[in-house]
Image (cartoon, rainbow, N blue to C red):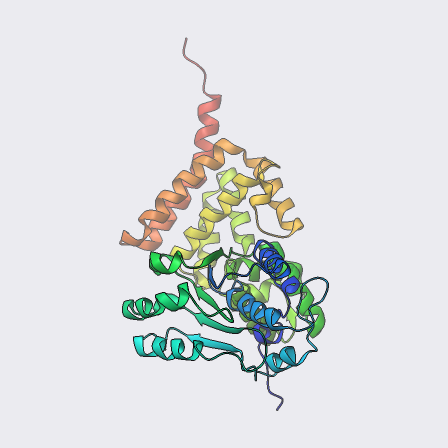
Length: 376
């Protein structure tokens, strides 16, 4: 059987221009290389799976390339680039601080820093999860980080910047990576799906992007999982089924029932949700999120805050216009209150049903209040 390579590794970016959603970082790094104004130490901070280690490797490869392209990218052909691609570079060292966090590990690293590179221009040390270093290890690292040899560069990466001591922060150029926009994740997944011959519904890719919450590595892991489950045919229904997500159709139906004051169908719809085995907490949280999406869909200026395909945005816009902002705010107030109090409820099913009945009757109550005669 042919060895399978996960998409996160198979399609890991190898150039600055191929990094997704971090142009503010890659542009700065390319300009620093172009002008020769490289700091001795970099600190890459940000959520998991957004490209910190990838950018560190690209930076390490690029500054050792002997034949940079006009666009300040590594050529991929010189001896340094080839040895990097083959995993045999003698100038690039990666250290996982989660498992090498003692003062002895740092002392050994400092000893290696004192040895000049035999070939190439720089020795680059990439320390991942650097916040895991012990206080004594941080202190042993300070002097070397502040005054390293000219040939030594340090790239530190962390998901928890607040755990880095100030004396380390002051010795580094700090780059804050941001969560990747859903549109960028969807566009990247489309490219991979086409290369892999995977058939997909666009809405399924938006589901993956929302589930990944801004992490491209998470999105690629979910993508691989769903491709296996669906045998290369990604549909909205199958994606929701595999990820245990409640289909948005249920929430659209419920809002229509709320508007009509239809208590019977509201409760029957919730029974369908229960029969499918969905948790009440997830249901009420999803309902609040749906109402929030309707709220931001009312005004075209805030429609960009809604993540999803154009077809789904249009659907939200139509239902939002039918509800109106005052009613949506009233519903959001009810659903948010019940979402907050759900964990303390005794009879959780009854608790959700009461919330749904309040939502379904609030529209009728508002209409009755509006039509009531004003006393003279």
